[in-house]
Length: 261
Ligand code: COA
Image (cartoon, rainbow, N blue to C red; front, side):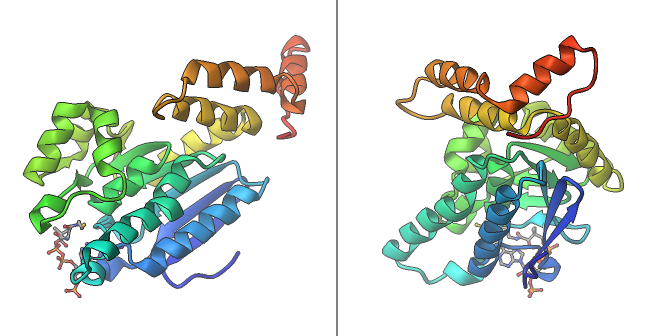
């Protein structure tokens, strides 16, 4: 696997694990890290042997404590707009629309761009020490990597308004109650729980899963009729080898062995 300076990309059979590795900066996202993450996600997504991607932070303290504040502290209006647009294109929208499922394993602080990164993933699992928030207004700015859009769609408008306006943090159990994370476990068991979920996913048709991601995402896109996207994606599945294998295996009372095509 390719070597990076700020992240680690590892493969274990059909699972890829991406670890953001700047623990002494609490894994804050600087420009280089965002570029490396883009590259790693692109590579993992293009590799047909990889069925699920887990993203996490190194160390026991943080998933990601935000965008790297030291990098944008003296940016102009124009540079600020570019920072948000480029980040969304390279990483946040990129992950949300990836064909391969991405699970965020939130192992500590997920603040600002860190929570936005977790929210761009297809779903989230947290350790019980995790703390989540969008503290941008305490810095005189607003979330710029999709936080004002994805947080309300995950937790509801009123809760998102309160979280963003107070710049406060919620703990893992509150995030669970809000539906921001799907599961909470101990830090020791976080990777094994994510791997267990990943192995359930990877038994299924990767082609159908990619179609499901596109159809579900269509529900959140303006001007797109998600039901029509679902009909299209559903129909397209009938032309895949995975569909032939899945239905044949069921009728033959055996487990499907999907070719992923
Ligand atoms: N950008 C750049 N550096 C960051 C960072 C960020 N978002 N978050 C943490 N760091 C750095 C700190 O500057 C410090 O570096 P240093 O040792 O070179 O001074 C190091 O990471 C450790 O952080 P520290 O603040 O000492 O840890 P702490 O345990 O006292 O506090 C936090 C933890 C998460 C509460 C605190 O780091 C924090 O508030 N971070 C910023 C969160 C934020 O506003 N994110 C949104 C950005 S848009």
